[in-house]
Image (cartoon, rainbow, N blue to C red; front, side):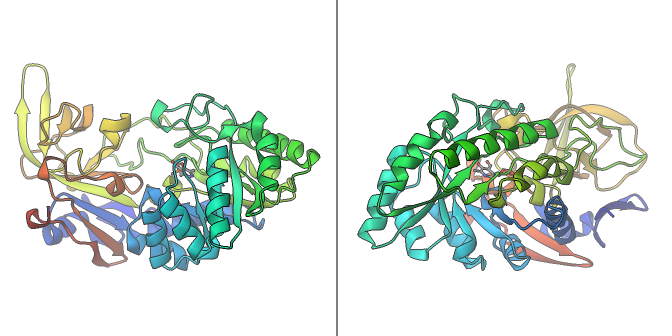
Length: 420
Ligand SMILES: Cc1ncc(COP(=O)(O)O)c(C=O)c1O
C-alpha cells in the first residue's frame, strides 16, 4: 500500500500529516518516507527472482547520510561518482568490498583514496584513465580491478541531458573498441580486468530498451571471451524509469495521464534478466532513481497569487535552487495540495522567487485553486532533488526529514543565512 494517502482530505505520509511536518520544521522542506524507499528497493530486488546479483545503489541520486545508512543496512552496495561520495558511502557503513567507482573524470587523488580503501572496482571510461590507474596502483603496490564502460550506441529516448549511451555522448568507449582496449589493459601489471559495464541512460520507461541493451551486452561479452578476455563481472547500470505523472490518484485531484509506460521498475529490469542470467557472470546493477525517487517529496508554500491577462502564477517559497529538475530537464513533478478543500481546478504556473524565467516547478498545470499560505507537495522528488540543491540567490538549503510510521526526525538540518 502507498505511504501517501489523503485522510479526511489531509495529505498524509505514513501516519503523519504533511502539514504537521511543515508546521514543525518550516518550508520549503524535503520529506522522505522510509517505508517507500524500502518498498521500492525490494521491488528492484524482486526483479531478479532469486538470481544471485549485487545492487550498487547510485549514491548520486540521493546522498543523505541516513538514507545511505538505511540502504547499507539493507545489504546493498554503493556506486560512487566522486571521492566525496566514496567518503559518504564508507561513513554510512557500505563495506569497501561493495563499492564501485564510476565516472569519466576521476582525479588522481580520488583514485588514490579509492585504492587505499580497497574498493571493489573502478568502472573505467578511457584508455588514458586505465594507464593512470595502472601507474597509481603500481606506485602503491596494488592492483586495481576494472570494468570497462562500453557505449552501446543505443538511443534510450528522454531528455538529451540524461542520454548517456549514444556515440556522441562522453560516456564509455565504443563497443567495437572494447576487445582491443581490454587486451591492452590485461597486459598491464597493476590492472585486473573483471569485465564490462553499461548504463544506457536515465528514466527509461520502455522495457524494449533494456532488452536491446542486454542483448548488446551479451554480444560484447561473447566477442571479448572469444578474444581471450575472461569476463567475470557484468554491470548493467541503472536508468530504470519511474512514474512521475499521476503518481497520486484521488477524486479531488485532476487526472494526470501517465506519459511513462505503466511498467514498474521491477518489470523494466525483469525484461533484461533472462538475457543477463545466461551470461555466466557475476551480474550487478546500479539503480538510483528507482530506489529513492518515490520516497521523497518537496513541500512548499504559496507566497503570492498573481493574475495577469496571460497567466495565473502561484509564487511559492521553494525555488530552482531547492529542486532544479524542472528547470534543467523540463521534468514533471506532480503537484498536490496538502489540504483538499473541494476548490475548483485552475491552470497555473507554479514559480519560485528567483530572478530567472527558468525558476519554475510547473507551467500551465491544472491544480485545485490555492491561496496565499496554502501548501503543496511536489511528488517524486527523492532522486536528483536535494543532491542538486544550491545556495543560488543566497538561499539556505531546506531541511530534510525522515518519516517512519508515526515518528519523524531531522536527517539534515535547514541551513541558515549565517552559514552561507
Ligand atoms: C554510471 C551510472 N550508474 C547509475 C546511474 C543511476 O541512474 P538512475 O538513477 O537513472 O538509476 C547513473 C545516473 O546518472 C550513472 O551515470
